Each structure stands twice: as structure tokens, then as C-alpha cells.
Image (cartoon, rainbow, N blue to C red; front, top):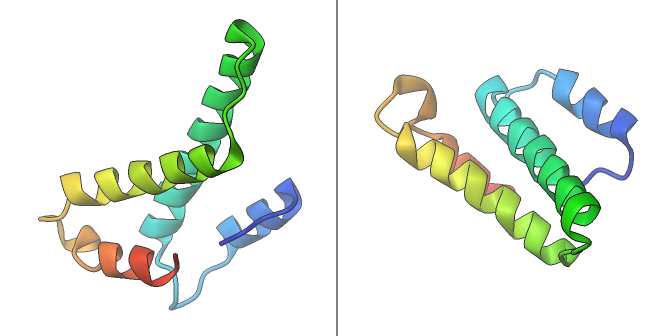
Length: 87
């Protein structure tokens, strides 16, 4: 999943299909927004910019950790394989 504009991100988030369940969409959206917010604050308050690959890795780790923490719940059982499939 790659987005070049907020419009594309919002369109993807509103898309409902059989490929990406809404739960995974919400996790990815949350991790993306949180990581961008964190990066913005880090630049603004600490004058430190992290490389883009670090931000992408942070998003990946946030989603994986969220799925792993809830792996026993019915909605989350197959999400890790779907997340890894779309890497």
C-alpha cells in the first residue's frame, strides 16, 4: 500500500473489498497517521528528521504488534498473513 496524496489515502480507507478487511485498513490507517504525527512532532520540537524507511518500518511494527496482541480474537486471526502478503 503506497499513497502519494491524502486523497488517495482517504479513498483507499473508504474502499470495501474482499482483499483487505476493514480491521486491517483501520490498523494500517491508525499506524500511518500516528507515525506521521510522531514524525511531525519530532521535527517540530526536536529538530530531528528520521529517514523515510524508518517511518515505514515503524508503521510495519505498529501494525504487526497490534495484530499479535489481539491474535486470539476472531477478527484478527488471519490479519497477519494478509499484512505480510501485502508487504
